[in-house]
Image 1: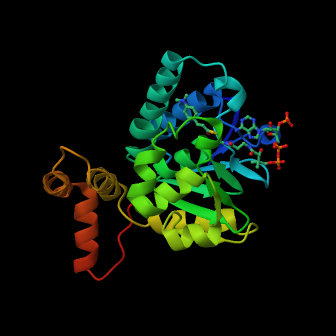
Image 2: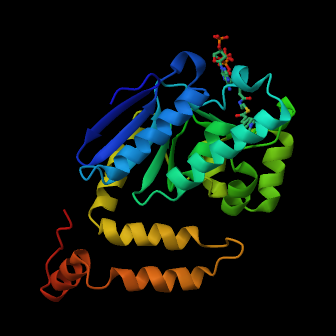
Length: 258
Ligand code: DAK
């Protein structure tokens, strides 16, 4: 499959999806967003892929936001529809993806770009990265889940500060806030992300799938996360991976989950 705005490579069971609009700092237009949706869904159905990395082409930006030119003339109705379809992609396709997704943040991650990174399961950022939700400076609010996922990750006070000031924070501060999991040099971003992927891939992808589902139930209104955990825990029993993992432990060897 070829895309207009993405580069898509599969190597060693990792699908790296690179957003490829560097002249526009990888701003997310509607077409790019729907291509990301398609690329992630194809990875889910492709047995050769066990983990997904999302990054941006170039050394300046991961994604500098939703494409401002595209939504500038939107009506309330169109704004709502855009937000609704964006939510579907970020929640159903990305956050609830059964395969782990790492955002490799290589520069600006602003507005919709940071919201995309927030929906991913892990975030690694290069030291030159700048992250923020500057929507209020444009007269809108974060419309792709930023008002919900940012406080979940860094706390309400910090989220209010970032959203009301619209300020950008650097990778050190993002690490301190818990907004990113790891910080690297710009040169090492992709090799570090690769190593992280390899560590994850040593484990059972089936168990990881059930972990993602349980963790996503955390702090969801109307959802009993403990109940979800019990169900997902039960589903791991009698699976090939469970047999492999426990047999290897009892035989004092390492399991091979490939
Ligand atoms: N959209 C469109 N084009 C963008 C862009 C963006 N978000 N960010 C950068 N570009 C384009 C610039 O227009 C410029 O294009 P040309 O003029 O060369 O054609 C090119 O990328 C290079 O940008 P700059 O020349 O500005 O580069 P600098 O290094 O000087 O500055 C910057 C880098 C990141 C500080 C600056 O580009 C910037 O401030 N960009 C905008 C950042 C921003 O405000 N992003 C958040 C957008 S708000 C919604 C749902 C979600 C959202 C909105 C609505 N609904 C449901 C309706 C989300 C909103 C956002 O994401």
